[in-house]
Length: 416
Image (cartoon, rainbow, N blue to C red):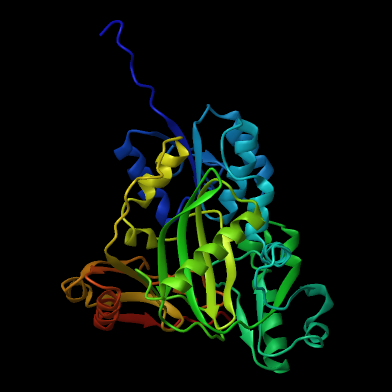
């Protein structure tokens, strides 16, 4: 009607991988909320909209150029990034657009294991002994100063990719060379990041591992959930499997985890949007492993219904400080790959879904897909979700459902 104000729809930009699990989920959430959503993805910039999503074609390997492309587009009210690389692009673009987001410096520090360790140490947090070693110096030279057990890490990869524990010199040299070879893979090397010329060497931290999902509201942390990781992560590789909440740690330990996470966030300089933090706890206290300037990856967010909507509303400038989140027990299992080969099929999905407390079983592996184990691999066979009356019951349900699944994996043919 004439004279009546028409509400202006907020427009958000989502920066994420074209094939990422989360991109479609966030797009659907934006539609439910009535937000206009533009996509910025790593789709091929030569082809004319191959995915039919009208996304901006961004070169993730050139964050500055990608940010310039974003800034040249239409005005947006907020940015959401899915992934560490996209978060850097989002930070650079937000500076150009003068909209709230983390600084580029803080995002870079968060996604570089060496820079993060330096800032944590300067802030007085518990950190292992660590050093950054140039790959060009060679494995034998690096092994001369190692103390065992030690953990070798690429500086910029996530989800435990490339992380290897070594218990002696022989294992150290093999791990060093294996990581160096991984960093030469085209998908990694094309980014031409100087940090990929180094490997981080850290003393191994014993203890239980946890993950905290939160959101920063004007620099203040709102904790959304604290997950236990009940399976031991002692190496030689560090494949995550089960996340379950609420945490069964004592109130004292949980409070210390939150305090340490807040200190780590401040040390990095993060101020805005979702954070995913991981830490280990032992008799010495809480050891911060990382704080990523992004939400939890993959489909794991399904264990926390409403997370996408909360992140989108915050990006649009809404007050989400009191938006309720589910308080019941929930969990997710990232279905591990049992052996390398070619994925053929799976049996038992219907039986697993029918078990008590199981919400869904989603197989993300595709027929004919080559399956690669950690530390080189970066994917899972799928996800199992459960919800129930207690964390213990949820964990049991996840393990029982996993036991009902039987995967057929064919041997990969050798290339001659």
